[in-house]
Image (cartoon, rainbow, N blue to C red; front, top):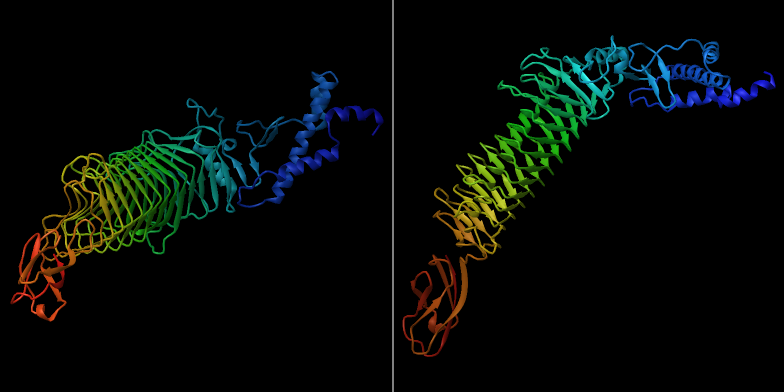
Length: 585
């Protein structure tokens, strides 16, 4: 090459060997989406980049030489005619000063480049599912990533055709809406994942406006999808099946065993139900569910087992989280605000509800309902479940047995902090703090129960408001009997510490409600009896005496009432004589 060519080469900015090295390095930086690394495709992409860079440099050289026809002549002679442009529905790769626009980059496919006709991606001219389907098909059996750029899409129902496919947008501005008239009631989903493994859906907004009882995503038939950073809105309908943003169900119908789904960092707003899981394993993490006429999250059936962790629910008319016939599921560290009921367990078993915060539910903060058994409700914060006629912090209702209610804080409920009723027997209620409840309806308690055989121990029930509203610490109502009320602190309530109605209820060791007392009574010299105040809440049923002198060895209780006992001896004593006593009410 002659020395005279060095100056144009300088204008171009790189030697041919530098351009080749930079092109290869640039392609190596393109991510393969964690699916596979296609070295052959990367080599081909590097060669294409080299050709396109050479064309660009040639154009610069033409501009330096005077531009116009000369520029085009230089460009065509250096590299030949260019082919593709972004979004033009023509295969190929284009290079601009700031971007790489490619139909294929290793295991990545750009969905808009597979459209059979060109669209603008605007509401008036949206992209379609044709490009998405073609891009997935182009990946082949090995799978890969289909990228959906920012813009509007009008799509018919899409079925993921193979394993190991990732469908990823650019966030909530990748907006997918249904093509009118293409969705079948109670059947169609915008994305169907049926028996596919390794599928990821992420960073898109799916709007169901115009559909009737359909699904944003339906994972079924033995699939294990990961669904992340998605937004689901307006999946509504009139069918009793209920529309929902995500449905993971019959996964598979032949199970168990069942396949698992992970749903994380998604937003559900204004659907009939946000998420339904049924006959699957699942984990729902860090999601938000607002404004649903039914439930934020619905767990359907004892064969749906998993966790809902760190989610937020708001203004869902029925429940924030509804676990129906569920088993061995953990609901932890969630926050509910102004839902109909924060969390419901309905005919559930072996559940863990722990560390949740429930604010201002209209009915109950946590409703343990309809034969729920063997479950743990622990360490939850329940604040202002204050609807008149309904508000209970925790309600254990309708035949729920053998549950542990432990370490919860219930404050400013409309009625009771904890309410155990309607044949819900033999539950253990320990170490809870229930204070300043009964804020809308008078006469209620920190803990109230109308059932039998429950253990109520180590709780603190009080009211620290300037104007107290919580009438009782613990309140037995009609039907309560045979409970064990032990070692609670019950002072500081509006009306009284404890009301007991059951003849077989055992009450012992409660601060603020004295059922045990002891002391020493002294019969003066020349007398044969002494009246000793006992300080108990009612007339003692048991009094034990301990004479300190032989002269009073025959001491006995001659009378007892709600305030005192009378201790007598057969004859007058010759000196002051002490008698120890112990009384239980």
